[in-house]
Structures are given as C-alpha cells and as structure tokens.
Length: 172
Image 1: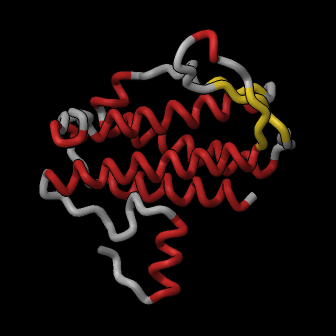
Image 2 (image 1 turned 90 degrees about the vertical axis):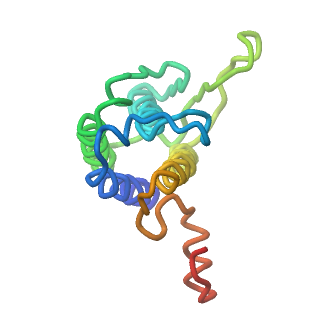
C-alpha cells in the first residue's frame, strides 16, 4: 500500500502549505494561470479523491460526478478540513479489504464516447498522485506570482525529487 502513503504524504504537503495562506490569496483568481485560484485547484483535487473513495465501495469510480463545492474554492479553512479528513480516509484504506480491479469513467469528450474502463486500485492511486502533484505545481506558480514561496519540492513529481537527490542536482 505504498501508493496510499505517497498520496497521503503529498496531501500533507498541501496542508502544511495552506496553513500559511490567507483566504484572500487562496480565493484570488490568477490571470497568468487561466484565472484559476488556489482554492479552485484544491477543490478540484478533493473532488477527484472523493470520487475515488466513493467509487471504491462498489468498484465503480465515476470521476465525472464531482460535487464542485464552491465554498472549498473560497474558504481556505474549509479546504484544509477536507484535506485533513481525506488523509485520514486514505490511511483508513490500509485496514480495509479493497478491490484489485475497478471500473473507471472519466471526462468523455461527448456522451457517445463515454464508457467504463478497467483499472486497478494501484493505477488509480498512481493517477491521484500524479493529478495532485500537477495541481500543486500550479498552486506553486500562483503563489510565486503573488510573492509567496512554497517549500522546496512542493508540486514536484516524486520521480523528479528522487532524481535531484540521486544526481546531486539542485531544485531550479
């Protein structure tokens, strides 16, 4: 269950970062990044994890049924509470019997191409990790554009962090 720990670890980075972000910056649209706000990215990440966890119950994960709670986009503390609960929920998976194979549906261009695909629990956790790192990278850009420097390694893929460590390279 390494992927559970990896996901929880990345989410904890987000929690640590957001504990120092005020609501006005959290909800501020950033024109240089498609006018999205930090809160929009947090909400989007949470929506995908929520669909993942909900879908595990019956082995059918429909990422298109996201709730899109706009209050999470505006209220940093609400986003933080949801992230903390998500870490607890993910860690709780370690003690559950989980399906090895799941059916997944996501983002069809049109209704005719919408269909279910076979995936695995590990593959979906890999997707969640990659998806979260991607959105955290965008959050990092928004923060830097607003004079706030995230911790080194925030929004950087685990493989890149490992490469930097093994090669002695420094973060850019």
